[in-house]
Structure formats: C-alpha cells, structure tokens
Length: 144
Image (cartoon, rainbow, N blue to C red):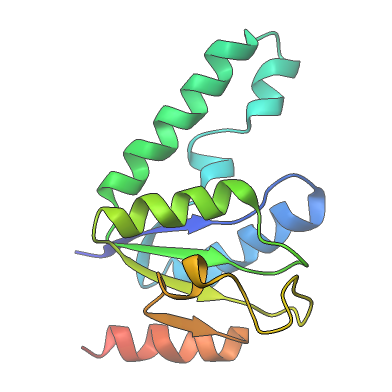
C-alpha cells in the first residue's frame, strides 16, 4: 500500500498549477498524492461558478484539513521570494500532527538573507534543492 503524500504548493496561476501537476506525475508511482487543485478544487473556481463565498472557503479549508490528517508525508514547495501562505499553514498543521514534512526549493530567491524562517526550516526533516534530489529521495524511500 502506498503512503499518502500531501502536496502543499501555490496554485493561483497556470505555471503553478502546471508545476504541481508535473510534481504529482513524478511522485504518483511511489505515493498516493493528494493534489489540492485536483482533489479538493480551487476556491476561486467554486466562487466563479456561483458558489457562496463563505461556503466555498469553508469547503476547501475543511477538505484540505481532512487530507492533511490522512497523509503520511507533506511536501511543501518553497519556491518564490516568499513561501505561499496557505502552504505555510498546511506545513505547520501537518508538523503539529507529527507528519513527516519535506521541502523542495528550486528557486534561489528568498526573503531573508540567511534562508527561510526557522518556523519553516525546522519543521522539515529534509529539503531538496532540485527535482533530481527529490527523485533520489523517492527512490531511496521506495527501497526501504
């Protein structure tokens, strides 16, 4: 049985959505990946399709919370000058539940000159700086 992996990443523009799909395709042979944009929907799409704002926000929040509770591992995408706020919340919540949390940072931009906020870095058991590094970890994970 595959471990469940939650992908915490920004999903507000086409490039972010496509990168998340790419990551999911790399991980899905080893993990049952929860991809929020696919598995729980996008709040702005729900609202644009006539959904009540408060109900849509609550629905997406609750769906993501339940998925984090069920996951074994959370992978957070750390790219960008600052990390997506929702992904930061998801990381903190997963960490507080004792989930294994890992990060991927393929982007050299960062807000702080000495790295990310320690509330992010200290929650991660591993942080990868490239897709090949992540793939190596997945391969090692498969061989355990």
